[in-house]
Length: 111
Image (cartoon, rainbow, N blue to C red; front, side):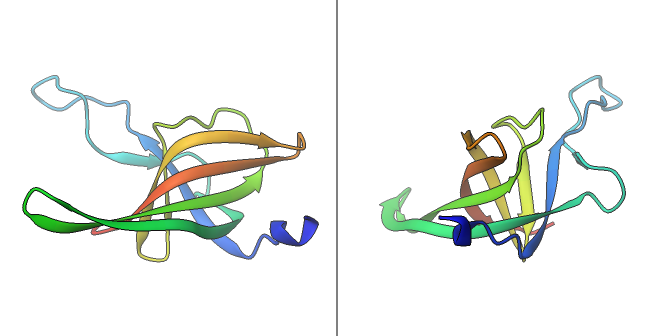
């Protein structure tokens, strides 16, 4: 199983900003969780995909797992950016006390 944890991708961890707009509404911006360039090493693997019809059109959904070294404070309201995609974190799973496996929904990232 150790070969599954080859950290060969640089990913950006983000959370919603804590600021407020001029109308005192919550800010909708995202900020990097980590200092510097906001990136950490990870492995990224698509584990399932499906296609379905919703709202009169065809939709695709891909489930991805992303593995990183364990760190405190990761929650499902965060997201990951990598390779032109955003990954909405749906669950944070511990593995062997050294790793976190982040179960994510993959979507194209438009900036």
